[in-house]
Image (cartoon, rainbow, N blue to C red; front, side):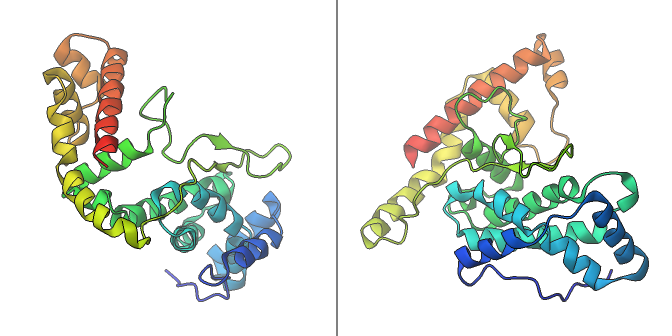
Length: 261
């Protein structure tokens, strides 16, 4: 697959200037988007690829705002999201009748998730992929969630009033100040790391046997995770009841991990 070597703005300089720049790029109509995608697919037209990418850089910025609560630099999140956008543009099929933004947002979020899992200080204490996923979901939960299947990036909001198009992106979930670099907190963080290392195990141990079984079967197996219906059959209750127990257990664990932090 052709590699993109394009003059695309970088978020490593002035972030305000970068955001101002990408917001000035025109939004493509569906026909313009389709024509450019066909030029890329049929002729490997890199200028077409550049136009598709730059017209969607604002989407990456919007998605990145939803992950500021993890204390990672917004510029780094944007850079990772831009990689996801480029991957999406390479794979986009203009004949499927789907707008690029709806396809690309999944690739953008996937790259940001991987970046967070690699770099977020609390996530790194979990040693297995399943444990890291559980940590990530626990920290993403907010009060009032009706289901664990709610998107991690927060509630959906309209990105642009694009007539009758159904494009969407994701709203910010938190804007927490990053005070980790303050000298007075360095010693405190060293102690916190020890508490967090044991936090997940203690949180799981605090659950009743049924709740522990559900969490372990749903989250801590590397493969062949149990479905809600599998566990409903095992315990003789409805799938909705299993979901409720799982959600309550996740809330309890999140509270314990937050207290330990």
